[in-house]
Length: 377
Image (tube, rainbow, N blue to C red; front, side):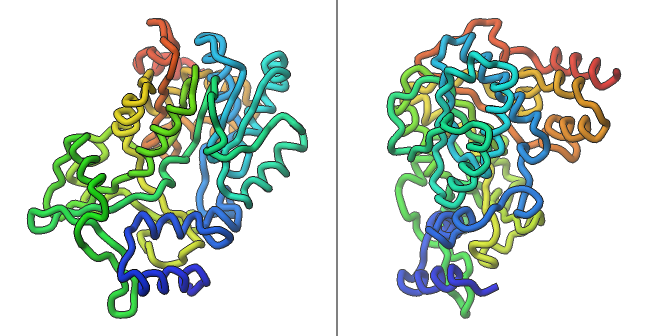
């Protein structure tokens, strides 16, 4: 499919000779007025992929319970900040729950959304301001300063542009995007920046012959800049990925970058540019290491199913009136055919300390026992 963005990329590659995959991915997703997240709604049935938000409003309700718990337990300010709010459905579900169940929290709540897509900001406002007029303010990441409260994101970091690195003939090379025989293809060459080697050294990663690994340098800049913008806060990052030893296993020969077009996964990176999503698994080890350098301490790391159960999603299942509703909620925590396999939740904190009885230190065994009781009833 030839598009104006396809032509733009091809002309840019001819002009420069080659570009990094990170530059290509940034253009494909975020080029003003042309990138995938800049011109149409990519979420839900009409888009290219589903998120946990699309599965059930219980996802947002459960996050709201979790954030209220953290505010009360850790003595945080009554403030939420969501970065990368997508369609706005998650923010709307959270606010709906608070308005109905936590009226005091809702009335005093400060809610901020950080979003770089003008198109999505308009969609978010259209949805949220129907029931919550004046409750949410929109800011740029640069405008956020001195934040205290709960800062969170859902499937944000996986959409940060990544560099691709391969070991060839016992030498590490970066995979660039170059035009060859009239088509865009990968082309190995020297690293575009020494930061790539620094990243690999920081997690002590040994790349085996012909293995491709995806390096998210934007993750580094983001988490360190975020840490500087926080006073007393927790950061909740929900995304798919693993800690480095699992993420970079040698059997992942082709890396983790993939594309989604109309709910179908593919690796046609240079097709349908601007019309399909491009993502990569998140390296939570680096998120922890680089955050810690700026005083953002790791508090808890767990699979999404465990976090949701600890946050009260079993109550949502018990309250469902139909089997269909129950199945939608269960999809958020079941490993087969749901969101429970690769999705993780990472909680970091700045200026806070947790007690031994902090909810998110409970063992998986205890939580599984609770789940068994609910599912058998």
